[in-house]
Length: 339
Ligand SMILES: NC(=O)c1ccc[n+]([C@@H]2O[C@H](COP(=O)([O-])OP(=O)(O)OC[C@H]3O[C@@H](n4cnc5c(N)ncnc54)[C@H](O)[C@@H]3O)[C@@H](O)[C@H]2O)c1
Image 1 (cartoon, rainbow, N blue to C red):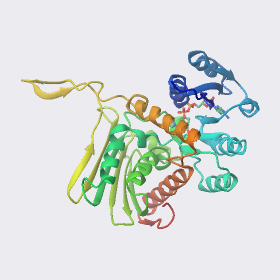
Image 2 (cartoon, rainbow, N blue to C red; image 1 turned 120 degrees about the vertical axis):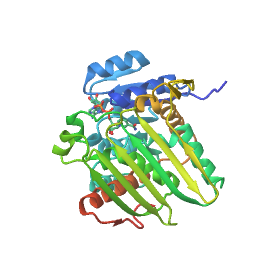
Image 3 (tube, protein in one colour; image 1 turned 90 degrees about the horizontal axis):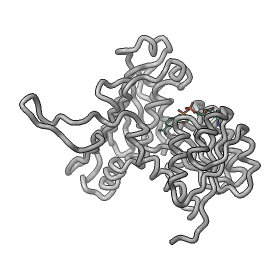
Image 4 (cartoon, protein in one colour; image 1 turned 135 degrees about the horizontal axis):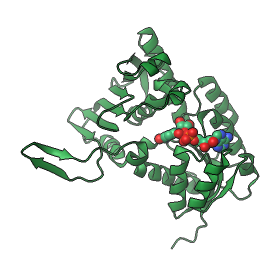
């Protein structure tokens, strides 16, 4: 049995993603979830009760708490850069949810502030930890399909988020596609070109907000690789999350996930099975746990974090380029800006 003391962590935010992180921390044998900070104290209290932590209303109390090793930032995006800088300045390791911020200048200013701090700073691009996607990537890296030529990423939400969420999301490229842009860089870190088109095919509400409900992005890697991302804000058959890596000697693909693998064949049809897991909380449950484990490993060993703050910067650079391309109809060069 390990005699190491558990890592003492605090959590900012007890909303949708905060609840995932809190429950995973509580279940992790090497972690003690000490504090949950949220101005919405009722939410923090409920979550603290369920996880054995202490709820605090004022996020400042996290910085006054002695003996913490790190924090997880699951509060709204506009709070991220301030909490990253202040946590790192106090020597606390950081796992921050995506995106770092919606404004690249704010992100670059944060990068300057944290320059020189040696604590791990990790970005919550959880899909890198999905067992299937991670396996495809490691088998590509091992050379199983020869030289990588194309990656196809499909990501469709089951239904659009509420109007208020869309209105403050920064647009589909910065809010939704950003996960897929990071996934693209997981396979091809050096992207040189971005082309994107957006459309409004089903939601007048999203159109009124000057955003797209449907987009396609094509990226070119420095080795000529082509990566295609397809996103929709709705999908009649659930949360559609698939990818395919195509190489000179073969292909590796990862499909959607159902709660069980039971399938029915009958006179009325074949291969009928249960619906796909409904949304990110269920589909990426294992990924969030593996992400937490990787964060704990970095804190304990000092191993570099992946995905890193710089991966967060690169994904936002690509999202901005995609938004520009969709607006102007031109391909945007990002050579040297995201590797
Ligand atoms: N990686 C993923 O799969 C994923 C999924 C969902 C959300 N996110 C990201 O997580 C962040 C939070 O999203 P959400 O959907 O959980 O939001 P949410 O609105 O459900 O929850 C946010 C919580 O943070 C609290 N809060 C506000 N200011 C705070 C502060 N200064 N300190 C501590 N708590 C504060 C709010 O009261 C609220 O309870 C966003 O940046 C979002 O982009 C990531």
